[in-house]
Amino acid sequence: MSWLASPRTGGMAALIAVVAALPLVLTNNYFYEVAILVALNAIVCVGLNLLIGYAGQISLGHAGFFGLGAYGSAILTARFGWPSLAALATAIAAAGFLAYLIGRPILRLRGHYLAMATLGMGVIAAIVVATEDRLTGGPDGMPVPPLSLFGAQLSGEATWYWVVVALLVLAVWLSLNLIESPAGRALRALSGSEVAAEVVGIDSARQKVRVFVISAVYAAAAGSLTAHYSGFITPSKVSFFHSIELVTMVVFGGMASTFGAVVGAAVLTTLPQLLTAFKEYEMMALGAIMMGTMIFMPRGLVPTLAALAAALRARKEAP
Amino acid sequence: MSPELAQYLLSGITIGAIYALVALGFSIIFNASHVINFAQGEFVMIGGMTTVSLIGAGLPLPFAIVAAVAVAAGVGLAFEKFAVEPARGAPVVTLIIITIGASIFLRGLATLVWDKKLHALPAFSGHKPIEIAGAALLPQSLWVIGVTLAIVLALSWFFGRTLPGKAILATSHQRLAAQLVGINVRTVLFISFGLSAALGAIAGILIAPITLTSWDVGIMLGLKGFAAAVLGGLGSGAGAVLGGLVLGIAETLSAGYISSAYKDVIAFVLMLAVLFFMPRGLLGGRITERV
Image 1 (cartoon, each protein chain N blue to C red):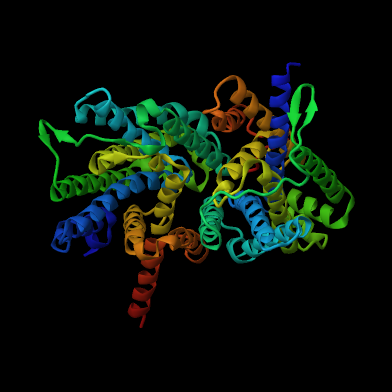
Image 2: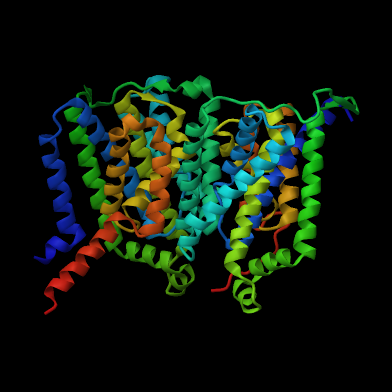
């Protein structure tokens, strides 16, 4: 039964089973809405985890790419009348291209300096969105037309659910395959020691830029879909705070664990919905979760639980 | 010099002095612990907001200010004790997230303790502007510049002439060697957080009469102080002051001559330019990383 333990087979099977069974408990539109938002955030986190968890490069500005996807789609469809699929593809390509352009100078920096540079980029993006109100609607945000695929409008909570979870499964599948490929091994070597990786012949700059582009594309795709799904987009989705939320999901779920990223997105997207009665405590709770996770289980939820399960199993098998 | 330009320079130096104080806070903590404290801006907020409440409770201004600085320093010490100390030796990403978590926590706490409204602090000595080269200078600006200058002098005396100051400097250069000569590195870390929280609070109190204060004032001031610290060279005290002033002046000049909507962008554009072309900042030393 070793295939069950491998993320590429067992993990995928579990993910597919969960998303297929979930509609049984999604008894109303609100539950569907939460599930869709979870899946969209999970797509961003799976991409961000490749960058932070596997390649060891932090980004405090990924809401910028998310926002580029969201506002790209919104502006091209609402202001210029583009078909939504073309707008989506263009916005995603633009995010990937931007990541490619800024990737090289930015990823030369390490640790704190990289954190600052990505943060700076993200803050600039947020200010531009809030200021260019003729295009973006400014701080009030702007409405986004619905997504139509080949002439058919995508509507209804259930339809959206299946489209989004299909994309999530695809995103996870691509990520798992990338990690197991030579490129993935190269990335993990980078996060261990960049110099050692270069010594064994890994072009570290190229590898880092590539994973940066991939994570930007994931974020932009999810951003674009989120905008179409909610029908409205505000600058809060581009803010520094949103970048932090995304990083927290990745770190809470477990760095260097693709399913950890999905679990992190699920927990931290659902939690505020459960805590609406305690709305005023939401910020304090988020801050406390961030500090508590890092202090008490720095490896994140899923890897910590996995290590715990392995330890229990070992104790049972020992005579 | 046209009166317009003089006005921009004066406002630039005033706001730049505030950025310099926040940047000094970043540098002190970075030197002692190699942590970038993203919660630095919250100390600015706590300083301003606590002073406002204490004055509201009837305390005279000088007492309110001292008490508010003490409150902020206490929060800084508690933060070090309960959040930074337990995670010592953790990777950079972990430490960054802890300090960001602390800043969100403190901001959330502030909305509960106080509210989400803007609050004003009375100017320390009136509103009658002083005219210099055709430009109007608020007495509060003189307070900001004067206090910042005094703090910079006091800090350079502290780090250059006193034993605790030298101990902090020694720790920042070589932690292990400092430990070997008998410096209690943990105490140094503890003191650094208290000191830098106090600096942040002073900045928050000084600027509150000019720009108002509220629960979320720490976000932008913190980020800009941080940009100033990077601009001058992370960990360099003189660099922090220079970075703050350059940033403040660049900001008011661009607001005046280019676009006021984009004045907040300048700080980050300058920061990115420095990171890309001279990553150690204007006054940072050349460091080769050992493998």
